[in-house]
Length: 263
Image 1: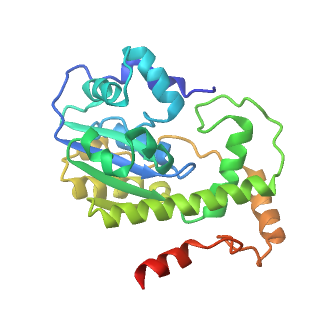
Image 2: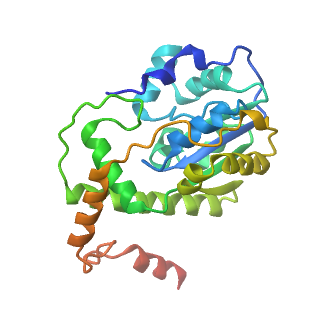
């Protein structure tokens, strides 16, 4: 496993343990820019350090570090060490991580006063291509070493990624609205083009005071996309078969099941 090793370092622990008053949860999908947003928020010193703590492999490593067994005990240790002095703990959670908590309905039991920042990326095909490349290289963020330079265009892999991202975005949108959760929507393009403005909006939304001098005016991590990304996007779109449905009609569709329940 090619870890982002820096995340485990004690230098990112806050020196004084602080009681948690609020939790910032970046509700995200793979390759959505959540790492970039999390690092920008961390720079302010007011949102903890929102990282992918419950990614299965990261979580295993954290359990080893803290000598814990359960998700709850591990998060308790992380909250003890990674809550910023103003009482805010930050974490990023992909929709695919919810099973670690026993589902969305159990999520609130792990966090104090959670506010969700639902992060999406407008260019979803670019996100799916980025996912395909990351799977092949093993480098999910700019700080990781590339395990494999030899990447190959794979239309099936891109298609599966595209479907997954659309499904998980819709799932976040559904559960956040249906549950009445406190959330705001943030677009990846805005994070890149106007980082400071996005952070100020998040601070206002959560009613968190932020020292303006600590707010970065541009991303603090690098974007990974290269020329090959655009080549693969163009190739995939040229090969697209418009007759392929998103949800197979060979079996009873979700829409048919829903319509039966509603009639």
